[in-house]
Length: 270
Image: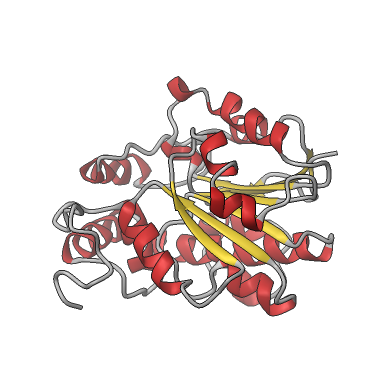
């Protein structure tokens, strides 16, 4: 791809790797730059299964979204959505019901710029640039107020996001603010890097990630489970990503260790 495609905002330094673009590279996407590919390959050498883990996280997104649609949810909020790639949330839910509405949120201008380009002809989707912590700014944004009725259940996604949220940000308090704003019957889906799984090379990979100016914070099973406070956790609970209600061979890896990474779960607000 060209060094500066039209959808890249001028303030974006494409020589600094970005987690969303590295993830896009692992998913064989086109929206990444040489710095992202270099870091992606460096981490692949440390953890050869990381590309499988990215694919399994994307498969979890699909299964969690379909679970919510089957439960009657028709509006969705994807926070930390990253670069839109094939099999993104709106494609999944609108294939089932074209009336489903989706609001994507990311703090990275390049992710939002490309999302807006991708969604320009879809009047049931929008993209907002905002930080996870800006709960009211997100939920009260004109795009969100147009598409989301907070008096009706909402499916909230925070996939591979909260491990970039340090404890000093008080993530439980942030999640509580979202929980308070959404209606009963709403869902929360989370995936998160596991601190207590058999993950050879994880520490070295985290060190490599520091070049993105983001510090991943793996957490234990109990710590990830605690993020669902105030929600009823859907069976089978918080488990390895591939183990959350797999529907076929494509939802699993040949490597049992990869199936345990990252943790994933869905909760429902009673």
